[in-house]
Length: 267
Image (tube, rainbow, N blue to C red):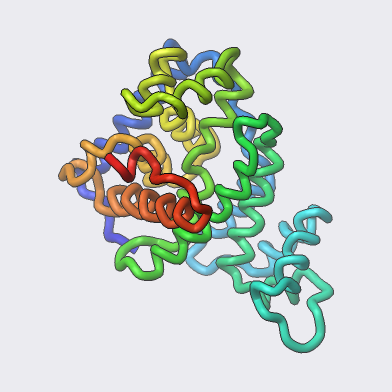
């Protein structure tokens, strides 16, 4: 983990937070409806914020939702973890096989997907791709000194969360998505801002703010299309690294899926 942020970088994160709060009160974000943070996610965040997380508490949170517990068991008994011996039959056994970090990642993904459902054809496979991105981000972080795999996983999961929120909040955003994806004369977020006076990077940061996620995560989501900000001394290195690793993860995913280069990568 990185050392404490410098005063300059702390001020930049605070500025992003203040800008979001101001726009939420009087600006374009007034009409954006943010789903409440799931209570179990808040409990999970609180448990993991401890220097030594209480494993029994995390297991109780996992067991409190039948579907979430079933998800942990399905993954623990699946081919990804190459189980040997008897299958896992309890949440505790599943968490032991997966490990605490992976268990928390699975729980977080489950809770977020159910808090922000996506049914629109414009966002087909949204959460599947977000989960893949999160896994890729965590793997990249394990090879980058100073970047927390847990933070990287969360960034991959929440990176584009502003899109389904905008789709649920703003009339005409579905058409904006089609237009933004088709245009080659300007960045995606420029079309969003032209049509709605905000974009998915800002709204994603708002979700992180309302849900009380890590400040670095909020800032990285806000800046993930602002490549001019990369390298500035007033932004802490972990935020730069998150944004850069996100670009790499997206590029690798698109190559694996046989898709053309992302516009941000090509730029």
